[in-house]
Length: 221
Ligand SMILES: [Zn+2]
Image (cartoon, rainbow, N blue to C red):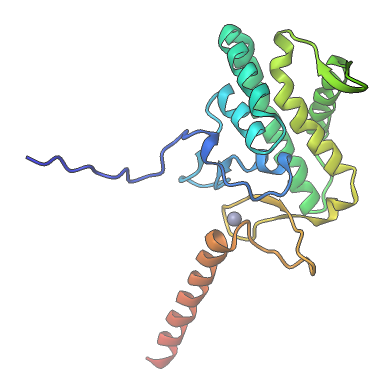
């Protein structure tokens, strides 16, 4: 007898950061967009553990594959420190989403979120050092349990850079209800409305078309 494979009715929860769609335009925004969509019963959280944070940092170009693999090995040895870093990552993601949402809405950013981002940046600065690399120098990070926070420091720095840049005026939120994804509008005439034209954009077009047809039918009766 053939076994039929039933497809799951709802999106898998916690499928990990390997399937992330990178549409934000900056690593910190892609990190904010790791809940898909941001609101509603069908929301899927792509950050299910520390490995997903590493994966996100690697895919957005903040960490090299080699550094991500080294941190992954280190995280397995220091499981409780990795868990602490994961909790901080979730807190950072919430703080960044609220900060950038307030930017889009032209409101004051929550002070406690700015303070949390500031503390993350301060820890990053305190843990960085310079090492000589041939004739030049590179930033290095002290190899201890705190270095498991390194992907978070890099995300925080990406956010700090964007918040203090002229590009901040181009930060927008997807116009589709429930989506909540944030992106940098890099279009010439600043006309981007959706996180993706193929996803939210086409869904909204279909909705409008359906609504127009229904309204048209209503008038002809
Ligand atoms: Zn969207």
